[in-house]
Length: 339
Image 1 (cartoon, rainbow, N blue to C red):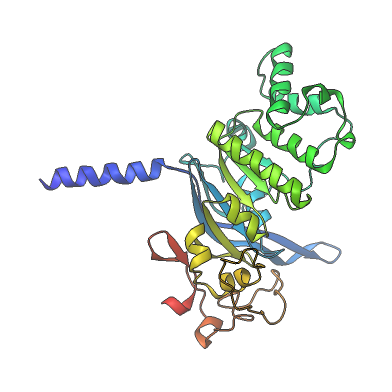
Image 2 (cartoon, rainbow, N blue to C red):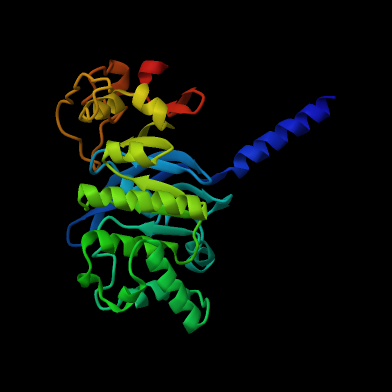
């Protein structure tokens, strides 16, 4: 009888793990600080310091925090634009962190990125059609005619006229260029798209259009998103679960409804209190003003990195680093207040 129970439990665990597309464990990215004629390493900028989270298939995971908190570096390290200093990047069960470039090539098709600045991420010397066809050529996919047809279909799918394929990036507006960036990310039918603040450089009206396109594409192609942003209102609109980062570390992770209704970490509470009230039915939060500036990631505080600005800091916070713990089902917090 016990064997039957054990088998059922294992099947449940396997099913749970099969739902996870990306799992990041203890990810670190340190940039060396060099000095002197011999360029000796005298220290490190701890851009990402022991970050862990997972993303389920078909969901949108929002990653938020102040500028310089390490969220963009996290995304670029996951896709291996930066080499990780330490940690695991499990994609469909395969650890990508130790793979060579040749071993990584098959996974490049499955993970794509949409960058913050659509202009600098597009080659100004190439037409839009050439830019979108390039992934097909790199992976030796389709004939010349099929590539042209697929490019035109992609442009149409993101709301652009297919006849614009012979124009150059400078001939498009910012919103149109970002649509091209999204189309390029879709060329190889990826499983995961990392959006590095993809709408922050756009006007508010254009932001909503791009977000709606991303939402429609997710439903149509079954995409999974890692959506990096500093605008909490945008993240609330598009995300299923949210992770809050501060100075290279993860402070809180939970679903969006819980995060906005019951934030537990003092840093999350301060961030949410800064969101303007846009509807009469919304509960007005008491504004929490954080003292001081964000410390340098080259010399982060000992213990909890947030204790220098935390209104509820204790002596214990200055000495011991809090671990990210699950206080409620699916609600993870790194704070000594809840130990």
